[in-house]
Image 1 (tube, rainbow, N blue to C red):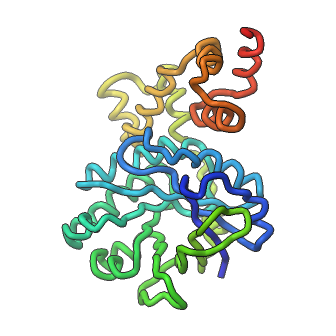
Image 2: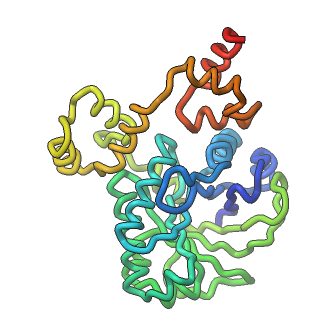
Length: 292
């Protein structure tokens, strides 16, 4: 049994060195929610960077508001855009909690899970489902639950789910050094880091690499590009989103002037936001100093 926690922007700044010193081994971080990458959790980049620096093993989750399987696939693509090139030791979880989603029945919920997780898997992620014990039993088919990594929530002295699960979230009111206020507590029963890190995908490229290749003309244009990427086993929509981001990048000079105007905040906030947007904070700061 491996001790862990999960965090989001609601915990704010976290001292992950103190968390690690308390005996916690892993942390699951909210990456965002909904169908747009603009809905990234505002502390995700900071939480990831600092948890990794502290030596913790890291996974992530994406909160769903999906109204259809197609919508769930869009949520997965948004999630992948936010995750970027980061390495994860634990699965990436589809967070299914909305009561109105459960009200649509088992087939509907199954379809959301399969749609989201299949997009993640097509892009090289280890996919999982986060859900409370009661809806897991009532609205998720055993075949779907067995197909993906399950992270089940049930608060109390034991988990009463009879199926297989890899992580149990056993409290939402825990107290952990380094975390302000209440904190979700988890136990992992599978050494996911050993499973995931054992994989050696030597030929598969990540979306960022593919986006650069697209801009270099290696994947054609329009329908040809879509067909080539799909035939090679990649998710065209994810790669195209990366391409669009690269095309919309601003120059160092433009960003530096925005920093001077206060558009990027100050201190660590500025550094984290610049990194999250794909810019080099040191390079930007050097240009800011020159302009001032």
